[in-house]
Amino acid sequence: MRRILLIEPAYKNKYPPLGLMKISTYHKLKGDYVRFVKGCDPNIRKEKWNRIYISTLFTFYWSITLKTIRYYIRSVRVPSDVFVGGVMATLIGDDLEKETGVRVIRGLLDKPGILDEGNHCNIDYLIPDYQILQEIEYDYALKDAYLTYATRGCPNRCSFCAVHQIEPEFIHYVPIKKQIMGIDETYGQKQNLILMDNNVLASNQFERIINDICDIGFHKGAKLNGRMRIIDFNQGTDANYLTSEKMVLLAKTAIKPLRIAFDHIADKDLYISKIKLARDHGLLNLSNYVLYNYLDTPEDFYQRLRINVLLNEELGTQIYSFPMKYIPLDAKDRKYIGKNWNKKLIRGIQCILLVTRGLVTTRREFFEAAFGSTYEEFLKIVLMPEEYIIYRRKYENNGAFDWRSTYEKLSENEKNVFMTLISDNKVQKQVYSKTSSRKIKQLLTHYIIS
Image (tube, rainbow, N blue to C red; front, side, top):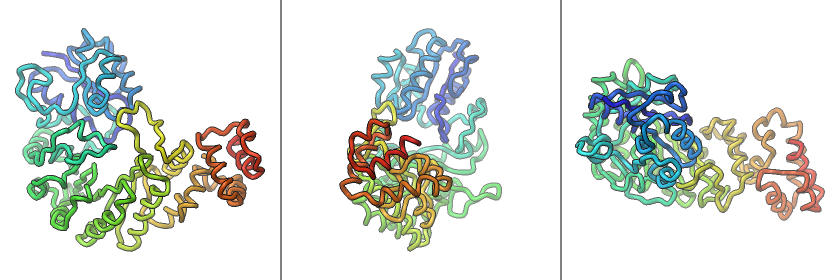
């Protein structure tokens, strides 16, 4: 019997580590002892393990992941007894190997013999071990949900997306009924269903997938223990594949919300037509991730948010937007700034989202209070000192009023100069010498005081 340690680094995560849960099932079937921890545990570190598995998420978690690997690396005989897999391991696995000497698993565990030579098990199809989630105090928001895939991969190869590297083959159908039944038998029924497919609408087996979803108890109006059940295609759906026929099928399920991607302002007409199509089929609860800091401009970003708010008024929908900052696929931190952006603009948006808890409300009055009623107002808000943005009421008549009054008196040329001076989000006294404008100097005073 081998001693197996499963580790998820201590970053925040609402999704349980599905890969580690399946690895746990694999080793328990082989009779091994399995333990799961989150983060760096000194007691667990003291023990000796035959093998350690560490999961990874985005590459910008490089520092915390590297710290976790190094923390436990002496708990095994040799560094190659530490197996590291997941998104980061697939995208920058060479760097992980060079820094630590661990064994990197790239891509999916979907072929025999990946973990143990000669073993014929397809680990990706195993029933995940929900029991290990009881071994830690960390509370995953979605632990009362089935986490699975009905397809794998994506036929698109978008430059901002890592799916084609992690799941290079598009698999049109993955049977989920057997897995859900196995979870029910072993761990009891789960309230909700989270499908993590990257482009389920591209499947030529979509109707079959919907039938499976309804058969396992997630048809429209389904309840469990007196509560409504929910299905969520949490990675979003591609408007390019969203036909009337597929919308009819989606409307048969307990889907909430329907997520439709809106990454580019050029997709405006297509996006609006699909929102209207959803409304026509009774799907009013919608959501999307709004990518920014990529090839877009701040104005593009603002207009996409505003379009959703106006659609809510026109159609009676409830579209919640979640702005998502673009970071390159190999970035080891979150500092990247797109060519049409700067640090101050990015930080201004983060300050707004800090107040709104990361989402953009469905109601126009609240949206305009947070983001402005025009792009010019939006720009004015994100350029304010951070305290003026976050604590809007506190500073409304104590600093922010003077700032706005002065800013509104600037000429267009002065606004451009001012934007340049504060663009790196660090304003020091030396910056005064870079302008002769009295009004700009007066504005700069607010940042230095702040």
